[in-house]
Amino acid sequence: MRLYVQVTEQCDLACRHCGFDCRPGDAEPIRPETLAGFLGSLPRAPSHVALTGGEPMLDVGRVLELTRLARARGAVVRLITNAGWARGARETEQLVRALGRAGIRGLWISAGLYHDEQSPFNNSLNLLRAARRIGIACHLNYVYLWPQQAGMRGKGLPAVDARVGDDVRTLALQRQQVSVAVGQPGAGGLSSGWSRMWDRGRARKLIDALGAELAAGVRADLLEAERAQGPSDLVGLGKDGRLLCSRIEGFGQAALP
Image (cartoon, rainbow, N blue to C red; front, side, top):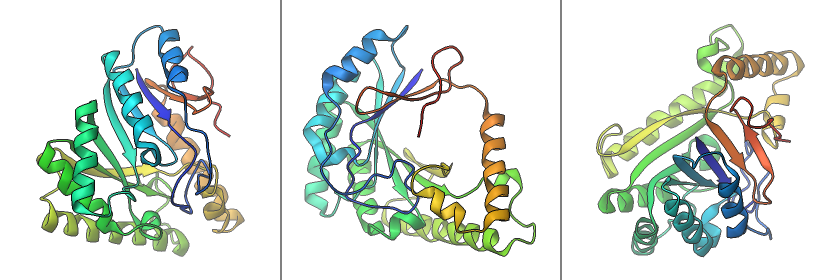
């Protein structure tokens, strides 16, 4: 079982594709006892715990506490972050060392066109350099609007081809930057890949902007890709203790807004 824990709904960015509608402002983070109680209620301990947001690193102390709590249950812990906090090399390395000491074993770094609009990619490079020096695995995660493998691209739909083209060019450019600054993706604990965008939150506006007919096609495509994926071992816990989603048959029903 893999557990995603929403540390907070607060974020220092306001990306156009955010499925949770996270943004700057005050937001109460998850309480450690909420996570502890949820872990205690599970039929078995999760093998992996991912701390996500919003931006978890807006409350570093909470991240460290939650990490130690999950590690005590034997879980491998990773942090999902936009790297907006990684502005200076020295400060970034100090924070990454603290994450490593607490038990973080992987960093899942949001990247790509939408994040570039809000946060310089150099922050991600700072984080990658520090993590590589300390020995923490990293994954660059690019979000795209529709699943290319489901066939929306190349059907004479200029808006789709332009949008996917922008994503692909951004990925190629950033992979080149990573190669120069850190090393080739795919080696030494560094990887990169794509994630489908949710048809939720502010991302809905991006899909709506394609026009009614194309938006309907994109949504049907996303739904088909989700159905094809089928049940998995994924469970999501909201910062208020609410079950965000479950893809485990018999565990619970998806409840994302």
